[in-house]
Image (tube, rainbow, N blue to C red; front, side, top):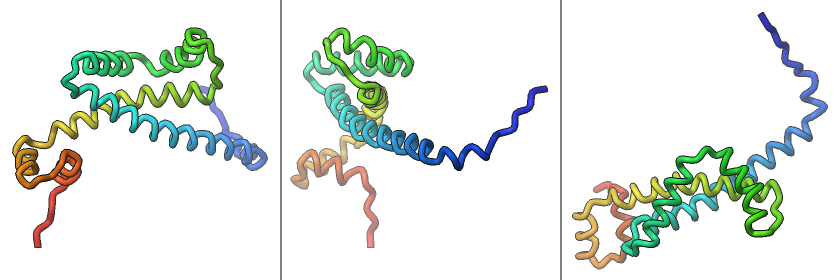
Length: 147
């Protein structure tokens, strides 16, 4: 059988390289998370819109993105978009754009489900109390303790 012994002695001499990789990973993750949350909110609002072209676009975008492998999307963002729009983008930018689009499609479903989970009775009660839509959704999903 094959055996492999990990060479731990190489790590101390490459700590700077490993830390730079960790820094890049954390930066990409943070940027992707922020952009995906904003993009997901936009897609979720469009998905629940009464304006059918916006709803159609959001549903189509979400379905295409969620049902396409992430590697294919990253290759398209890095190679095809610069050709189509005649712009040059760095690998870092393409990665953030691709991961943000991919994550926003999934986050949009979480937002949509959360908004639609607020029962109609809670919305009606909030209207009676004079709350606006933001106050309704911000407060009605959080249970209050009495006493």
